[in-house]
Image (tube, rainbow, N blue to C red; front, side, top):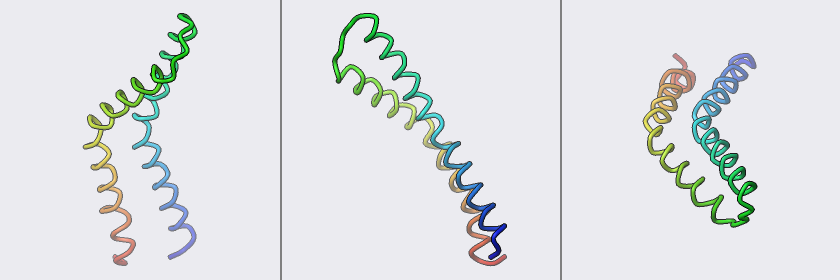
Length: 88
């Protein structure tokens, strides 16, 4: 395996990981900003107010996007990694 093939696989793996984690990180970012703005406006400084809704929303988004994540990972492994390992 040459260096160019290795670097190309690493680049594709990083792109897949960013694509898979984007929905979860986006929801966490938006929920954090909204809850932080709510806390700043109401002067309520409760730790569970930030944690519970953020985790709940991330679980919902994870459950909804799980098929997309599984499909993206399996396509990457079946299309790129397995042929590289088998040598075909």
